[in-house]
Image (cartoon, rainbow, N blue to C red; front, side, top):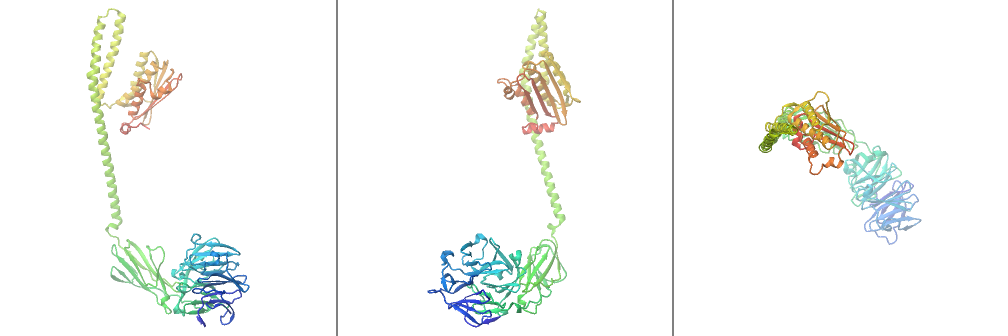
Length: 627
């Protein structure tokens, strides 16, 4: 780098014909491309007294020169005079920190409050955080590879035609505190808090501009005098001869990009040692560690013959890290609490140009699992959990069985109570009436009357016998299988003879043998249906069909009578409980009863009951019907 004689410049800008504009407290100076000859001077606006210094300079496509200064706002010099641009924020009194005249004839203005304003002709557009701009103080505006870039205190952003997008680089601090930019041969040069930064043109081309890749930083070790300050703007420009000019607190310097030599590629990185919980291990090809290691560190280094302080390192523990870990200038990597498994550690050195050297020889690391981390221990835990679940399941079954047993005992006790009541009241009373009517029949003289009394007494004795069977069933809780087909056939014959109707009974397939309580439920519902058809339905023909499919028992009763009113079929007749009782019996047995009828259309009844006792008991215990 070479320093330009003279005082410190506040801002610089490239002219339309390769010349250089330099601004300071004395005014504007137009110099030749080499900076040695003064081509002209422009005095500051009349009465203009900036508080600090000139912030930015730019020359538009029409030859006008734009300028801003602390406390002075924005100004435009054209046709030999200064004017205030009223189209800018606050009629030009808001001071821009940076300016840019792009190749399309547009002028850009950057402000201290993270705002960029685009002037296209006489129209303006404003960009801020909502448009993707998050760089803080906008001290830099430049054009590179057809894109406009804005830089400042917090980074660099690219305008994609609609909004700004952040640009990343490695290291990240290379793009902090930017105050100047210039395009050089194959690279973009930036002036910032880290020094003079070069970004490779290949990484900045096209869509890849959002990731600038590795950045090379030039600082005092390369001859740079001091750095730019937090308030500096417009501190870099490129002259027609290709040299990059930059301004710092120590003055103006230049750099020839063609004379910058590349850093030599780093040598192979070597692993020096490994330390585990304070114990040092030699850097051998493999390392076996005990279970649950605490703190583990790997020391490495790479020899450098030229500027070793520029060397940066990265490392990766394969099997644990998904990508390279950037160590910067540090030569040690630390891990804590590695889980059991197999790993490979490698390290690599990277020079200032982003060129990586050969990787180190890999170090294989094996962390032994502890007792609780072994596969067989996990399998044992899984088996134990399965055993606990099985035990809980068995306990649940036991609780359910006890619950069902308690329900059954309660039912049996209720049955015995009802049996006692029936025996001690109804049966004894009916039996006494039979004795009285029997005595009356014996004393009757008329033969027709005696015959009718004998028939009534026979019917009464049959009812008593049937009632005694019911009482016995209630007490015994009989569940032995019975022939349901024979019971329904006898029922059809008895009811048909009583009402002098034709009742046809058919059984589809082999009639099933069912438990006594299920047979009783089915017969009670069938008897009520047959008597309703004969007594209330005035049916001349009634049919009854028994069938079963799988675990389901079906019974269908049809007649050709006058039918039942739909409202009566749904809610029952007031004061009569026949239909309600049929539905209740079906529901308590876990079944379903459907009645299809209409006035003058006859009646069709269909009963479905579960055949198996466990399914029926489950429905009964839940208080719901069979689905």
